[in-house]
Image 1 (cartoon, rainbow, N blue to C red):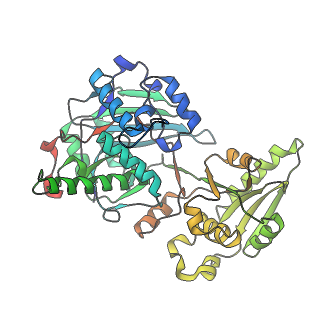
Image 2: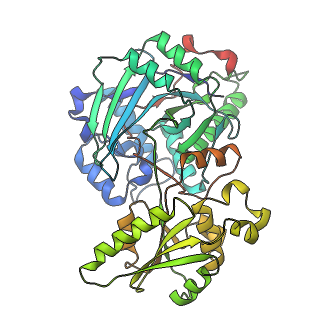
Image 3: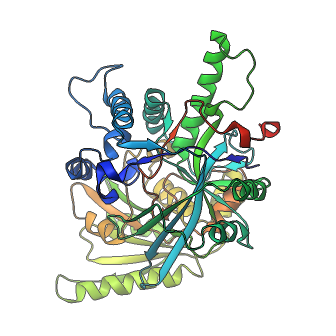
Length: 464
């Protein structure tokens, strides 16, 4: 179960960099090349330069963007651009944002170090990972010996006592960081240094199972880094006996209560391209074997926008009762809502080849019944993204159907947090990009250096 400890975080020194809004960045995996350029131009100390440094033609092993990240990290610390806290702390982090209906939501959580556990042993993944991103993140971790950004984890605690405990201790205190990001999300960040409060939070988390919401690649990378460090220390004779208290046994993590009202999951939509021999009529015929198909015709006249709104409203409403998937086909002049005819369809088609916990998930129905069966995209091709693009925003996805060699767009309703929990507890992982926990955590708020200078006086080594 969860073992957490405080740490001396490394934060930006505003006396050196000025406005925090100029130096923070979103997570590396949502930064396009264009956005990377914008962040580079925004400030010479923008965090993207160490978390996602640009590649260069002359890059080679040992002298590349990862080594440049390490050089910049060390340089910024030496120059006082980044400054390490004097006292061990956990960091309270809230994000205030608006939903589509302009309702204000606040997601709450705290950042601390979590003891690394093999997946399935107290910490559960819910999505598949790819080898490429893990290799990239491991190179960065080896070069910098640090956790650049947090793993986003969920825990369950219906009484919300942990957040209440932290908020009571911070009553009246101004946040150390208060910044609005590029998405318009208000990010507030406090240091919690009271040892008694930290101890109570750690005890409250002691029996909690953790569920990875975001950062699956980074968590597996941290496990790989830990294993490599164990091996190298044993072979080198540096650590005759592995104690479990070494810094590489912990990873920086953000903990948020899944029972809190501030939890929001967006879907990630699928754009399909490059299919040979595809015809709209043939595909829709296959869909009608298992789905009722509702059609929403539009023209290039002023009714286009109203039809899109009607289509999206119908997708959302039908999804509350049955598995429903939105569809747009290039050149068809219509939107479609595919509604699964029978609850036992997945059982009849796939039997025991798909776990029961997945058979009522929209994303599984899409990947197995539609992408796999109807379109013939193999699971291997899906995992390698050979015919798939992932798009978060609905309008961006629908607009993409007329670009490049794209042919179809599938829209999904959001996966519910209880479905994520059920899948993870059952030991299964969903297809990649099954969830998009909104808003994303900012990168650059705090860094964890894996240099051994952690607060051993507050660490309960009997649990590690």
